[in-house]
Image 1 (cartoon, rainbow, N blue to C red):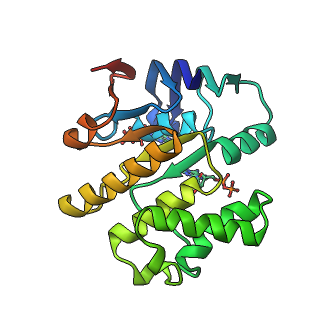
Image 2 (tube, rainbow, N blue to C red):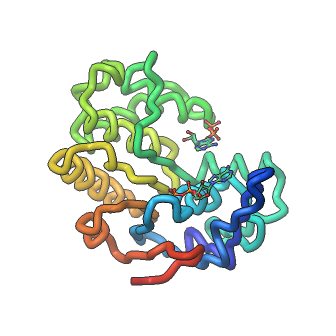
Image 3 (cartoon, protein in one colour):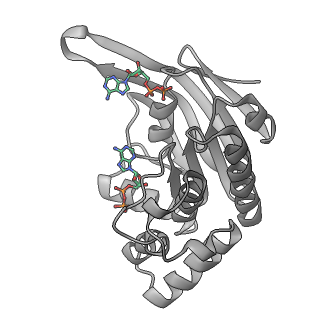
Length: 225
Ligand code: ADP
Ligand code: ADP
């Protein structure tokens, strides 16, 4: 029962006069339901490229992506977008919350875009915010929140449409070590509670050790370790 399957993923970027650069050279990955996997890579190794391909934001030069058993190659942009919206949640190093909206609205909006009614969306959002300890900040805008609080709201936004797959790119990378630890614990509790599968890129080997498995991205390939 795989939530994500990457097979032979290659990615070559064309940089015009600077020529081509092959970032991924046949990366394979299988992510089972409820599995939480650390993606460890030096910067520039192709971590973001891999996450974008896994999350259907980018297409590989070669290889196949399956989400919940469904092959994505050759699918229309529309189909890929629909799959991304319903199956995948993203968290970034910098939260990317909408500054003009409250924490609550930031979690409500993706649900409205997905056809959920306002009442149900608000109730779910408050539950999510509560589960990571920021419900009392619901009416504040991101600028009034601490970095750790902003990142917790960003997790809630990623979870808003109950995705099956969470993709996170250094989700606690801009926080101080102590806050990073607390925010990471909140993320893990939320992921475990919902039975979500997650691929979480991190430089932090201590955090990586707390996940189910670790994969290393090196020379364009993924290896278990
Ligand atoms: P990481 O997230 O591990 O730091 P990235 O996936 O962002 O790595 O980038 C991997 C390599 O691919 C880098 O050398 C980067 O400069 C290059 N790269 C990323 N995106 C593009 C792009 N759109 N066009 C050209 N080169 C790119
Ligand atoms: P929506 O489903 O609300 O229209 P999108 O499909 O544009 O949103 O994007 C879904 C998620 O992917 C959002 O979290 C958004 O921030 C992120 N995203 C969209 N485009 C990119 C991109 N080029 N690079 C990185 N993240 C992106």
